[in-house]
Figure 1 (tube, each protein chain N blue to C red):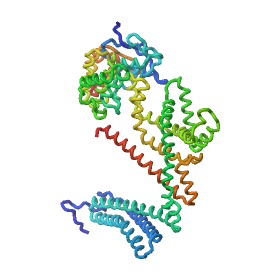
Figure 2: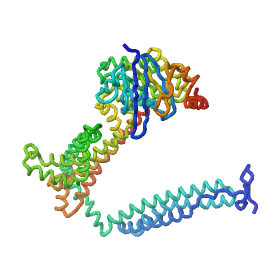
Figure 3: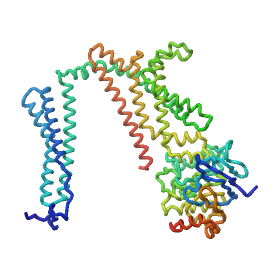
Length: 365
Length: 249
């Protein structure tokens, strides 16, 4: 077989030439097969889903078969054509082109896999929601029950916000005290260190819900002056702060340890007191390092405020539970989920923004 | 007023079973520049860090101006305000501007008001050639510039002695000279200095005394000519030969 040399170049030796063994293109068969199977599965699921949702057989054919096959088939056919291209290039001894085409074929197959996978997952979820004559949808996502309870839930959410903010402030302050307490140097502070560690060990281990139950029901019973007079919400704040200060203490400790020891050597060497070193050098740098994990703990705390239902405080979840019990429907509770998610997302973006701004200033951009 | 300013009296430092400094005797006179040389791990940096109490010692004592400054009961904050130190890794505070790096301690120590501290700092920054960098953050500066800020920061406490711990070792070769020029200037102003360095020509030029440390002891000490030109121990001869082969002398 006479092979046409690419322009301006001498034809490279044939693959069979023992002295010249060009690297083979990446294998694509497994990728193509997997992509084809998943695309078929996704298309089938789409067809099933349309059966639940639309009646006309023409519309069903259009939405359930033609559309998914066109959308999912495009990257798949691209992947297939590139593999063919690669084989032709290889036979024509255009080795570089063959390898490039094979790599492109793989990329197209991966795109196809990702697309089909997403479509399949969404289709399965939709099937679950609309199956049994839409039983799941009616149970969890009934628009009427959701809107009816929504404003009462928002009003009750104010309780959660109060508890979360109060507990967070306490937990941040007390957590810092614990973190500093557990790393005070010298023999004299050994009891303080031991006490801090003991506190962290104990209160990180007790489930928040149990602590809320004990504090909210226990303290009023003891009739200790001052301690027994508070409101239920104050007790809930204290109980959550007790748990979360233990978490925060560990976070602060990791943050303090993340600062290069040279920083405190330098600060001490200049004649700053230990307190000033902490206040001006260590803590400001630490704050930057722990902002993101601190927010995670704070979100954990916000969600744990829903536990106050065990002591009869009417928070957002408790309010929704009343609605759902009356309606024999869980849509109000789903609304609580949505509300909780909605309040955490802006917080995450805010911390992202703070960190990005700090990063930008540090590099002088 | 005695001539001796810093005195090491049989100073011994151990980390567990490892003896880092073994009965070191050394005196540093007022306005003198003493350079410590020796291989890595010979104890040079540790010896410097003992002077301002960053390391505690297990035997002997250190005296500053005739008064013991090692062991229990020493006011380390006051001591460190009298003895400045500059590190190999600069250790500027990255979250503060250059100016704030320079004014933090004078203001907190109460030796200057904020306005005084700022005008002192600007004057000192001008002296080290960084007048226009006062509002920059440390990571916007080159290594040489950062190290000059670190020296300015230490000098602003008006220390009676300055310790320089391999302050040019982290710098690119072309930045070394700007830092050495500054040190030369400070030395000619008469501040008492102890330093460790690998820049042998500089050590020879600036020092009144050079000490060779080997495995935690001072094997040889004397004027630079004696140490560099007629070493008497085989260890120092071997060390100087290695330096020579590395092209650093």
